[in-house]
Image (cartoon, rainbow, N blue to C red; front, side, top):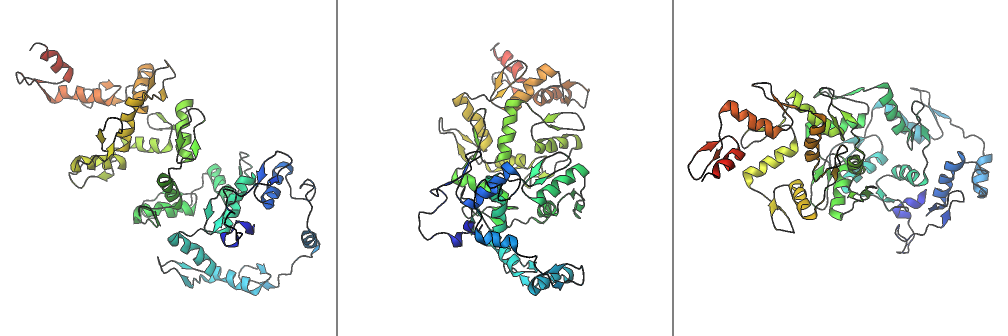
Length: 435
């Protein structure tokens, strides 16, 4: 599939993925492709093999037929370490570096060593951002030709690798091997810093960047850095305003597929992630991990200004703005300023009247998911917030905080007329009517 490489693209400037015609149509399903090679790959979906009969009348070239008649290729060069054989001596020499551990090629940018020059060139594209291999179907670019080939299988609908446990199919053998570990529960890759284990070495490498603080991927627009390339790609969509994933229920668009899937659970009511401690369920895996800190008491994020600790990094960022007084986000309707985008989005719903969160018990709708969660406790009778003094339980944290003032004797609400103090603001309002 050499046509995907930008360096080999036609000389006319009009040949771009946007106006590249999809002249190659599948006679089975009518799907069209920009290149014949993709059509031939796609046809395997219908017939399950790449034979001349499977191509439905597509003629094989003389060169292809000649290749079919060619005798097996001799491999005279044998590795003495593992007995693997190679057709060329250069391939044997390259292979032997696996056993010797020789890595003569060094990246001048970060100092990493590589056994092959080609591997070094591929690695250097991380720093340069160069992506010379382009998909003619969707315009997406890749730093390696092999990545383009794997990606093109998505358009062709080819998923050659099947899991015998659950029947799920994958485009890459490596993805299948990783998936199979979920059935075996295998996690051999261990982080020496914190002891956490992973099923893939790649996931361990990404995890270790939390400890080292390494962020090798830089956004050319704003110079913000990221730990992996997928985070950078998602971030760059924000500069371009691209939201390719749409909710089929309400039409809302999202930057990421995960974001869209998480949102769709609002409509279905699905909560697949459950806390093993209290049984509470969540729509997102990240939310259950954050929730579990309620039980463990873990607060890893500390404010350097005042020493306050937080369970979530986002809450620490919000807290920092109380010291700086920063409110960079403005409502275009009324001009009011907010310290966070989430606070602005919540406020904007006052103007739009948007209420996406629906209670499946009574049909009442809410503008925020937290409002729906609090309301749902009316139906379930759940009271997760417990007073440490008297063991009384409450459905909302705010109600618990008010109740705790009865133990501390705290009366924060002052009457401006007579100077009397009250525990609750409702008591103050009732008292104010006397004046």
